[in-house]
Length: 314
Image (cartoon, rainbow, N blue to C red; front, side, top):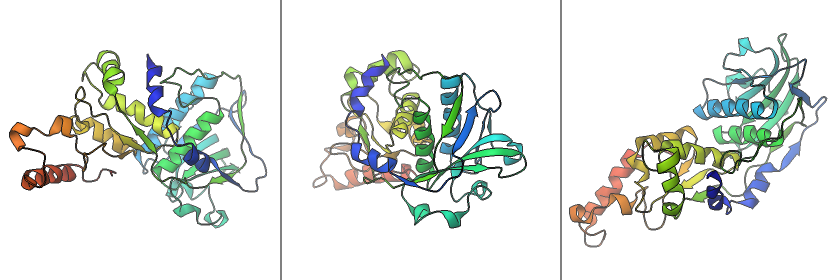
């Protein structure tokens, strides 16, 4: 049942993905990093002061490593507890990264790039840590892209959940990744429109995955947002057919978009993050015509703009 959604994402942004994956190589002495061997079992350290997306990405990476090795790394937020081999996740500008990255060695204007990330392997950054594999992003989505690119490298498909793609299991998992900095995407906003959901996604979510809402709600959107990030996307036009309640009908939807750092837009002729099919009641508001009913239409838009304050939206 899961793989029907694959259709919606076949249109995704090949050029921008290629640009995001373009690599600037940096000189590296020993690129090997043992995630799971008989001698080393890595832990994951993320910045508790950072974006909630850092936490989401760190815990999903732990699950991805488990899919490949049946070893689930411990996820920690206190650098004092970090020892052995450590995967470090966070913003390049965070205090967490200061002991691991010498910003003088970063090439170009990387820190100001849009949605970029770097990988760096560091030997003995302190007495307790044997090796650190650093994933540092220029913003939360950049960090997440770096994490999920690593997941793909170890054998976890972005479609592992929606299309039931199995991970190839390994007895040992050792990275041989040269240090690099990604280029920024060539297309700034990349994503999908959940169109025609009434024949596939909506009834499946309502009957199978999210019966508590009987609709496409925050639980379903969380899985969609995870897929978008794994595919290096950042934007959604939510479902808006008459079978589906408006995105803002469920407060958890907007909260989930904020947690996953997904940019919210609206489809067709509905500006200001509105959904006219579900939200404009002609009997109450009159006709949706700015020329003849400007006060009602303007207030309708203004109310949503106020409600959406703080949301990353178009």
